[in-house]
Structure formats: structure tokens, C-alpha cells
Length: 362
Image 1: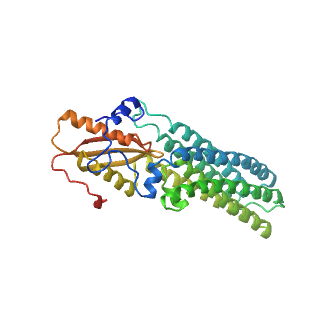
Image 2: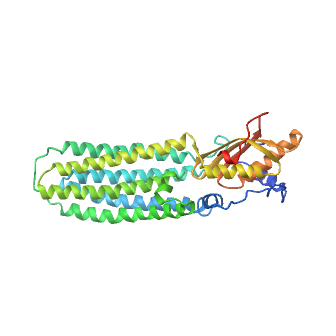
Image 3: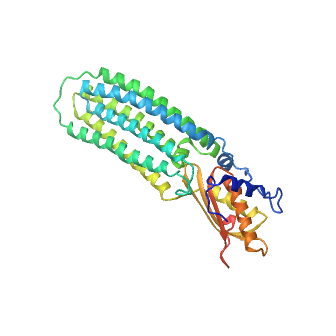
């Protein structure tokens, strides 16, 4: 049995894995890919971990580039028109650009390999930086937008030409829409392999970068429609409070997105359990191993984007000596460590008379 991370001593793990026999009495002595779309998608690493990291980085880079261009244009339009809704939209886009920058930092820091000080790797760095982005940047944009709307609610009417603002909003809608489509396609691609919708995938995925960009772009597109409607009503009725109302709605929208993203990142930071289907698969693999009679405890949680930490208590078949049990544990642990989805796998002996886990109980 070993507590070492899979990347800290790869030579040791490889040699240990090579000792595993090529046959089994109750099933093959290697991690088998089940006939299940979700598990095949995750465990085969195609495209979940190999493509998703690069895909997420491309998605966020596109989003950041678009948001910087849009933020500058909106700021100029806000200065020229004095529109509260346009000021809110400028704050929104600068918030999105800052959020995207922090998500890039999250992507870079989370892929650092495990070491002695961090035996489970740095995967949770991704959730830390994503939470900072949601809490700091989105909240700041929300406060600015709501404050601007309240301040301008009773503003005196003045002649304002919104032509430049509408042009900027139209261009922004195209750019934000392109970024949203990119995030949606990536979500749909992975969601189809799990037999879930794109929205369902992006809500539940352990990848906070994709989730952040998706909801950032979705909020941006909705915000653009709200701002255009608010300015249009202001121009049509001559009542300034419509413009102010648009700013407040955009601010509330940002606040809702921030709260949601903070909540999801908190879930993964404190330890988020894998799906029942993944749990069932790992339990079945353990029970099918020729050297394992039963499993009394199984803990599986995400410790980073597509990185699982496993702890299991098992009863070894036969009455084997302690050193043989330790060797068997090491071999079984390495079966899981060889799959990139498992950051670490640890086995221990079941307590005497412990309750036995069964597949039908999951």
C-alpha cells in the first residue's frame, strides 16, 4: 500500500504495475472500460482530459480577446452618450475580461504536477482562482451597474443620440455570440458523450474554466439585449428611468452569475462526490478483481478538473501474509493510477465485521 502520488514516482509505479498478471479468475486484472457512454468518455480520456484542457484554454482566450475589444468600445460609447445602461455594459465587459484573465491563471496553475507538499496535485487551484474571479470581478461589475442605475434613476431628461451605442451593442452581440457558441459547442461535445444536455454538462462538470466562460458569455448576451431594450425605451418615451432600470437589471444579472459560480466552486473546494455511475463502476472493478473478496468503504471525490481521489477499504482473498497484502494493494492501486483520471488511489484493509458494499445499494 502506498500514499505516494501517481506522478511523484512514476518509475516505481510502472514497475509495480508490470507485475500484475495478464489474466484473472473473476475478471481482467486491469481497468476495463465499461459499456457506458459516461464512463467510456471519462476513463478513455478521449476527448475529456486530452482535448478539454486545450479546448477550454482556446475558449477562454477567445472570450478574453472579444471582451477586451468590446469593453473599450462600450466605454467610448458610454462616455459619448452618458447612458447608464451603457456604463453598466462597459463595467460588465471589463468584469468579463478580468474574469477570463483569472481563468487563464486557473488553467495554468491547476496542471502543475503533484509534489511532496501537494501529494494530490494542484487541481483545486483551478477552483480557487475561479472563485476569486467570480467573487471579485463579477461582484465588482454588479455593484457598479446597480449603483449607476440607482444614481441615474431620477436624472433629468436630455437629448441623447444613441446611434453609436446601438452600433456598439450590435457588434458586441456578434462577438459575444461567437464566444458563447464556442463554449456551447465544447459543452455539447462533451455532454453528448455523457448523454446530457450542454447546459447540464456545464453545470456539473469539474472543469470550472468552461463553466465560467459559458455563463459569462450567456450573461453577456442577455445583458446586451436588456441594455438595448432599456435605451430603446428611453429614446421612445423620453423617460430616463428606463435607461437606469436597464443598468440595474444588468447588475442583478451579474450578481446572480457571481453567486452561482461561487457556489459551484465552493462545492468542489470542500470535496465534491463523483456521480453514482462512476461510483458504481469503480466498485464493480474492485469487486471483480481476483484478489479482492469484498469492499466495505469507497470514497471518490474530485480534487481537480477531471482528477479523482480514491480511498477504499477491502478484504483480500485468502489468508495472505502482511507483505503479500501490501504488494497486492500496491498493484491494485497502480491499476487506477495508470489512468489519468485518478490522481491518487489508496487501499486499506476492511475492519472486522464491517458492512459490505453492494452494487445494488448505490
